[in-house]
Each structure stands twice: as structure tokens, then as C-alpha cells.
Length: 214
Image 1: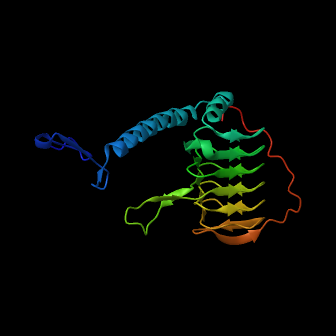
Image 2: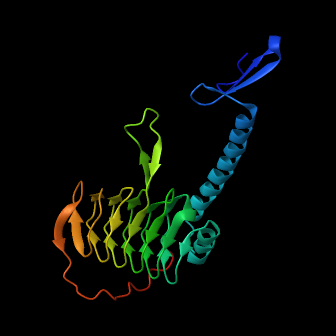
Image 3: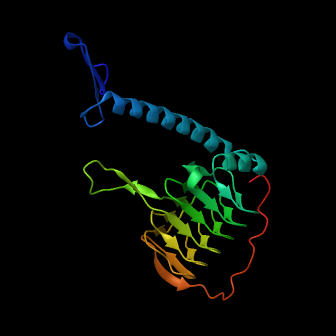
């Protein structure tokens, strides 16, 4: 008798069998570990739901408290605007004075390192996990994303896994970044290509104070 796709009972043999998602039989010990891991996953998902709702609170100190408790490392004077959406916040690091725009998606399934005085505009999406299209099971792969100091990322740009953006680089609005960007380079398009170079020599400015209640 099948109780579910993962559990089957054979009354004639008084035998309880367990199966993984691929239909392969597993031991009771393996099944127990899977149950524990599933419970932990549910608890993490529940907390992530709470966190992603708290991001709409207009008070920065309240948001920052929840971000910090969740493991996000936010340096001095950095700020995340309302509506930001997280995945695995514990792997996210944001440097001094950086500003994260409205409704930005920050993926922490691998390391996401954002340097100092980085300006990320609204609705930017940064991913460090994707499906392996050559895999029979469409398994997920991860790779860290590193954004250097004084980088500007325009609205609705998308940064894909494994990308390193050099110091002072600029990503134009709507660009899809699939590979590394050298320092002070300006890129745009899908996929992003070099369209210019930033002329500023000394990168030592501060982005300044963000607006209240945002």
C-alpha cells in the first residue's frame, strides 16, 4: 500500500519502505535524515517569508535589525531600500556607504559580496544560482558574485552567477551581465557588452544619505 510517493507499506511482510524523489529505495536512516532536513528547510522558508515581508517596513532601523538577525552583513552607512527580496541572506555582505535600490533581488545561495559606495538602482536582480541545463535532473549550481567598490548598476539590470564586476564599473539599465567586467568599464545590452569607459581617475566619493522612509 502506497501512503505517498515516498512511503509504501507491505502488510504481508510487515515492511515499511522509503523512496527518494527519483523512486529509488532508501534506508530508514536516510529517510530520517531527509525528514529532519525537510523540517529545517520549512523553518528557513518560514523565516524567509517573514523577512521578505519586513522589507516593506518604512523604518530603516527595523529592517536593518531583521537583516542583521538573518545574517546579512551590512557595513556602516549602507542602506537597503524597501521591497528588497532575499534568498539565503546569510551569505550576503554589503560594504560601507552602499545603497541597494527599491525591489532589488539579492541571492545568497552562494557568496554575494558588494563593495563600498556601490549604487544599485531599483529592481536589479542579482543571482548566484542557476539550473545546469546539461544535467539529466536539472540540478542547481552555484557560484559567487562579487561587485567591486564604486560600481553603479542601473535599473532592472540582471547579474548572473559567477560574475565579478571590477571597481568603478557601470552596468547600464536593463543589461544582462553574464561574464566579468573590468574596472571602470561601462557595459550595456543583452548580453552585456562594452560600450564605453569611465573617465574619472580617483574613485573616492561618498554616495550620501538616502531618502527617509525608503
